[in-house]
Every structure is written in structure tokens, then in C-alpha cells.
Amino acid sequence: MEPVSFIVSSLAYYAAQKLGDKVLDKAGENLFESVKGKLRSLLGSNEDGVEALEKVERKPDSKGRRPTLQEELNDFGLAQDHEVVTLAVQLLNHLQEKNLLPGDTYQTIMQGDGSVIIGPGSSVIFDDHSRTEYHTH
Image (cartoon, rainbow, N blue to C red; front, side, top):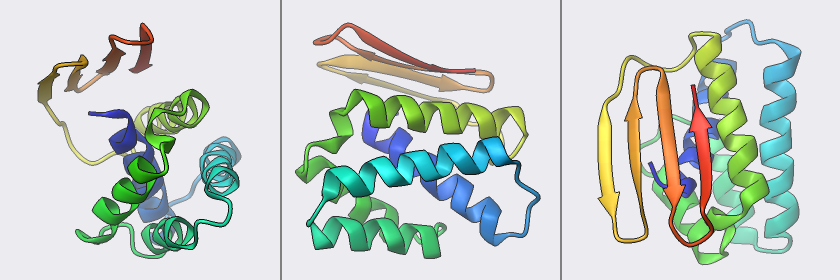
């Protein structure tokens, strides 16, 4: 999963739980608000980006809204923001610890600038350029 996918997935999964009347703890809510707040701050006056973020929060299961937000984040360069990605990974970890992520997923993506391996219990992003690793467990 590329960094922008971690960001958008973490927001969408959490928003879906929130809309589904799941009982969510304060730690999860704080992480969700941190990711969202950091994105809003970085997007600043980019109205399309802010609108895409709000639309994913309102309708997280939409097949069209997630790619739009991913495009906005990529266009604005936020997909590579270390702090945003780290917060998103923390949120995904939290959701996984609470068993709030959808079923088991296995995916392997090999890219020229790094590789991604995703499976139940572990996820890794390895960025060859910055030598940064992001882990979910």
C-alpha cells in the first residue's frame, strides 16, 4: 500500500466505524482528528482537497470519493509527508488492535522506488529514497 493509500484508508475506515455507530475510544478519535487536522492544515486554501477530505468523512464507503482524495493529496504533495503518513499508520494500527478493519487482506506491490507487503498482522512501506519504514502490526 503506498503512503497515500495508508492516509485515505485510515480516514475512511475510521469514518465508516463512526458512521456505523461503533463504540470508539478516545485514543482512536484523537488519532483520527490528528490525521484530519494535519491534512486540513497542510491543504490550507486548497478547496478541492478540503472538500474531498470532507466527502470521504461523510461517505467513506464511496468508490469514487477515495480516489478523488488520493489524487488531491498526491497533487498537493501530501502523500509523502512523513508526519501525516506516521499518524495514518498509527490510526490503522489502532483500528487493527480493536478489530475494526475489514477482513484479512493480502497484497504485495513491487514498485521502482520501494515495495509494499500487506497481510494480516503486518504491513510495511519501504521508501528507498528516504530509507523510511512505516509499520502496522
